[in-house]
Image 1 (cartoon, helix red, strand yellow):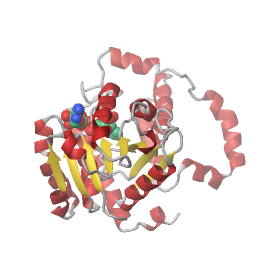
Image 2 (cartoon, helix red, strand yellow; image 1 turned 120 degrees about the vertical axis):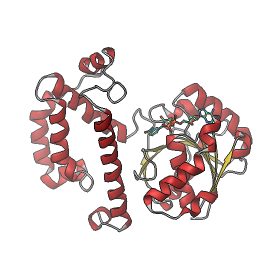
Image 3 (cartoon, protein in one colour; image 1 turned 180 degrees about the horizontal axis):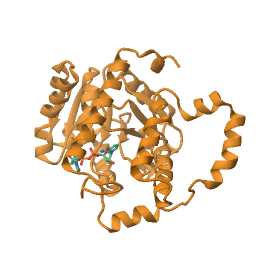
Image 4 (tube, protein in one colour; image 1 turned 30 degrees about the vertical axis):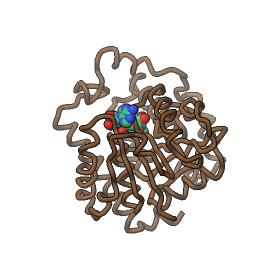
Length: 311
Ligand SMILES: NC(=O)c1ccc[n+]([C@@H]2O[C@H](COP(=O)([O-])OP(=O)(O)OC[C@H]3O[C@@H](n4cnc5c(N)ncnc54)[C@H](O)[C@@H]3O)[C@@H](O)[C@H]2O)c1
């Protein structure tokens, strides 16, 4: 794929990682942020990530921090925003960006949950706008959901899918702008039942996590649920669903158990207790374990771990 000029708006947790991925893929990247401390440290943070991954530092030179938004997006083929999760802020941002880019510059939001339609509805050229939902950390988790709205052109979707694929990501086309896109709908369907099992005294939080990690969680990186359904048979899946689905939590509101935790100030790592108790030591250990695991998966993929690439 030809090299593109990429502009990333927001140099926080996600923005700096997204900039890193495109720079590593050989694209020229500008990045901007309203907070000087965020912008001034962006190259150092990318350099540190690359060092940890054992990757070439050459990409750092392709990242150009800009204090001025108009300058950062001028001449860009592609602008992606990763500013704070605030609809009014994102709308205002694109209203400022649009007069400073070409008519065919593709504009994307990395929002986690805000409908892309509401962010982009004020644009003059809406067919070049879409969502690109990355997962943290962007340089270790492969998925990028590419969300189209009712206005997005097929050409814009195709170009973005190619851009991300060529940068080593696994883009997934989300054909309708629905809340939670695909990944978070699936993830939170699981979390709802996990919380419900604890709420109803079937097991404690530690057991829920242990059951998942020691069973289907082991297979998930190579066996998705629908592959699994075909593997065991759709007839068996139907028979299971006839028995299990009526028993599974289907409430359309957050669990009262979760609401009570929040009301009691049991906010998880932030307060030292959520579903479980967390010391500084156990928090650090869990974070380290997740990063170590993601790096291992990243390395395996780089080495073309056969069962990950063939199917
Ligand atoms: N953190 C995650 O796991 C995750 C995953 C997927 C998507 N997202 C989404 O990505 C976006 C960014 O999340 P994050 O975790 O990187 O947040 P963050 O707080 O780490 O970074 C946001 C950055 O945006 C900057 N910013 C705020 N207003 C700005 C403006 N007007 N112009 C330029 N920069 C501005 C802030 O100074 C900050 O550096 C959010 O929409 C979030 O929902 C986050």
